Length: 488
Image (cartoon, rainbow, N blue to C red):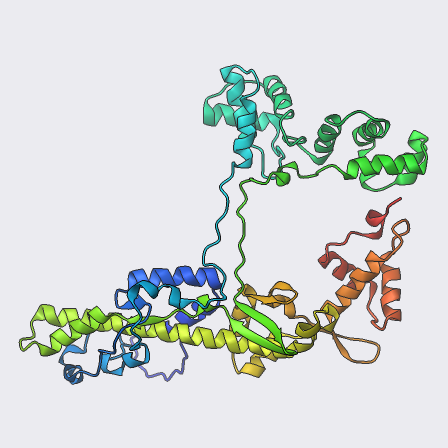
């Protein structure tokens, strides 16, 4: 049986414009510039640079509802668009408009990078110096292609044999591939093509001029690799009957080796990341000064051609069906242009007020650069200061960088939780980590401090922290356990 009833429901939804604004806010400078280019291509009613004159005004025909029923329930009528806000009577020539979007002290918009030979291409070029048959060369090139960016061949020989048969139609056996792999091991940088760290170190040692320390290092890596990696030095001293000085020289030879030979190649295939700061903080006469990167503040306006189209339609006495469709299309593009311009302005304001609040909250750090001056700060602290939602502050902090007198830093690094010191005061976990790092750096490396002793030292310094918390902070700082920090 069918029934009909009324139900009252209150719901809140984000408008497309709000969603667009949120997406723009989370974009860093370079991604924002790309998004701007895409919008300029997609919307012909939106143009960059400054317009020469303010042409668009309220038109009489805009008050006529006959042509205002184009698709979309959230349409902004043409008479509601205050184009004057975005136009200028600046008579700057067109050829100068592109450079006017950026201040003189901004960085260059594009940073050129040298085109270099890739890591894998360099290895293949080296193969040309070896005398190989066509079949051997194909196998060698396949092996080189299987090497990762660190310089390792992380696949079994059997997998490689099967892969060559199925994908390349090259039928061979493990013995032949092993033989060709020895050729690959002769390539530079030494150690390339190794299947694990032990083999990588051995390959590099065997390329060195033989000395007593090098020969002992080869023997140690080949037969006592586990004891060496776990730093069981007493066991090694007893095993080889050598002095501590001899062992120290041998370890020094091994420490000179590169555990990632591929990473030492300047022209490897890894993408070079170019960070463009979104903000800059400078100290001027003892005061902090914040600026937003000019590349985040483009000059945009509504197309003059689109204004003229609307003017032509207003002057037309006969309104045909095609003209009605045209004006609906024009209005849609004008709405979209206004929304985008508004979103850009709101983005600039949001970024600036958020970073300004962070700068003042961490004023002491920005003035002296000491990480121990960093105050505990969470997203809610800044959200309350600027009257924005926590998610909005998070979008600003997660992907934006600020250029400070102490280097370029990711904004989210300024956020940290609070812990109590022995005085009952809130201190930042960043401050505690910095002190822990300093204690470990100053320790006697022949007798590194275990976590329980580190906890005692920090307690003496006024930071009562549990041993497990010390272990957590040490791991976050990428510092190994005491045994692995030991040196002789």
